[in-house]
Length: 447
Image 1 (cartoon, helix red, strand yellow):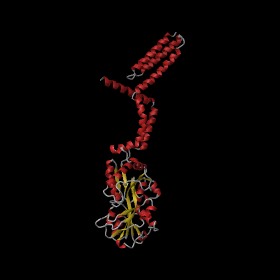
Image 2: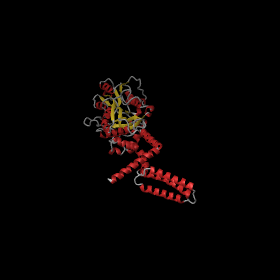
Image 3: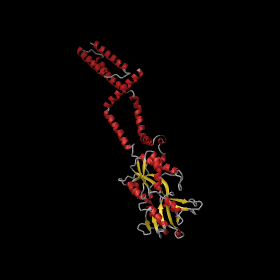
Image 4: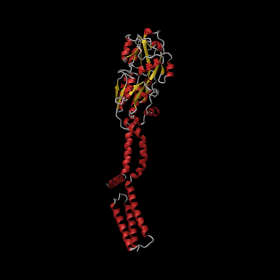
């Protein structure tokens, strides 16, 4: 019990010393506290946990990707709300609108204006989305160029879609303006597909991945054919956001030999865009979920297993969080710690390191703060004794001076007694009293 009593006394004296230090240095501590609070507010370690992701038509490839990503995000404590829209342009407008809840969206960077692109961040691309040009089989042999297609009834994706904007740019590159052109009719995704199958349209042009239900339906539809884009690589050279891709012969259905020959297409990439003020922790969670969703996908047609996500379309500036993710990978702590704790440590690593560099040396003093403060107090009274020592050394003092000096010693003694002597410092205290007694004896003999 003596041991525990001693530890209790040490802790009591340490706490008393801490309180005294806080009172004496209150301005300094308030400034330090304000700095810490300011740093925490700036770094925003505790973000909201909601992501509203704008995709495309319900049941489409973008919508399905969003739904698959719900589960890995939920495991990290993030709620993902998948929003059905008309496509890329509508998504970008919702993302830019501060009154809208959308804070993430699938877009085609090449379909946006420079002004729109500057107002968001890219987390990278997740897939190749070809320009699909399906046309009625009776037109086979009659159309061989993009210009030929403009002679027929062309069904398009919704006007608020990136597919519409990129189709417009494709025809503009071939000297044809589709805006206000009666041959080109924008509609809904499913409606335009139905028009082609019902012979209400001759051509349907849109963008999506290979897994999109409309693509899967039209690829095997007996009454339509897929247009082989001539000079596909030329478009890749002209437009930075386009890539030339190929559907190998028989790759859709080996038994039925669909397609009958290699087909060249041009494709852009689906970019995951976020608001610029989206919390880095949410961006990181979305990046991790994107990577996991793509790696776990059973179907990757145009890309390799670990090709996406990646930043390949510079049309939208890359997020600093995404740049770090692609250069260095996710924080190592994510593997071993809960997601939010790992993110907190990652964002505060430099702050924590700087704090440790300051606190650790000071801790050597703070653990003995009672002793440190006692040394300061003792030094003050020793200076008083030294001053009195100099006054009496080497000369005779009068009786009146002697009374004054002895009175000063009594005052010092009374002040010292008022101080609490911390545990472990009793020896130094009595050494001080001994010094005081010796000086008193010296003054009394100096007549």
